[in-house]
Amino acid sequence: MELVHLSRAEVERAGVGMRDVLAALEAMFVEKGAGRVEMPPKPGVHPAPDAFIHAMPAHVPALGATGVKWVSGFPGNVARGLPYISGLLILNDPATGIPTCVMDATWITAVRTGAATAIAARRLARAESRTLGVVACGVQGRSNLAALACVFALERVRAFDVRREAAEAFAREVGERHGLTVEVVDTPRAAVEGLDLVVTSGPILKHPRPVIEPDWLAPGTFLCALDFDSYVTGAAFRAVDRLTTDDLGQMEHYRALGYFADTPRADCDLGQLVCGTAPGRAREDERIVAVQLGLALEDMPVAVLVRDRARALGLGTRLEL
Image (cartoon, rainbow, N blue to C red; front, side, top):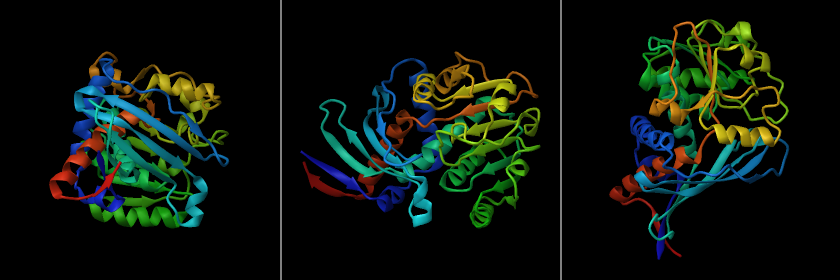
């Protein structure tokens, strides 16, 4: 009757790599597509405008991954020198329900989101994609680039952020880490037009003022919207050839809460794409948008990897229940 606590530093020291995360999420999405998982919509509270604290439970029996993430997103934290996203994740023993491990969820949230984007892009982007636009250059901009670099032979990146200094820091860091040419641009349009892959990762807004118009998206572009409809206009959503999401039920849950007021319904989700019950890209010139909401199902398999690696390395503090 004790659990292990892992700090953020210990979670990162466990050394789980992006390719490990990609493999774990591929396996999970096979289970999701087959209907062998459990995940209710996210309940939450909203203490400030455009801020949230969500409870995210999930159960993936085949991977022994059961637990809940308590995660917050507060846009005002950036001005305070604090992270936009923070949280804790608890793993439970699937046989007894007893909590076995509690860990910081910040790193896990970042890497699993990037991995889910790359898994969608494997099915929906052109295989020869070489260029990437990143709109909003925070943690998710970095993790999504790292995941996409595992799947595509990226050559050139354009980066935009409302704070130019953030885009410049992003360019220096990821350019050196991944050996890429990163151009900082002054408008969202310059980070979208003519590119193979685009990721938008700004704050999630209930009443957004999006700017990405249909003619910004070149034939063959794959765009992943991590920020709901904060950057992509309703006209652009309606103009593309396909709109997908990571979970159809979750997207409809958010629609009922007042989000996606000008967004059409998605035609399939990522579990269906990975299982092959929904088709991937059909033509080179298709313009495809994936709205990735972020799923508790993505967190739990990664948390199991972290827990097991940390245990092998002797990391963590044991706490009595």
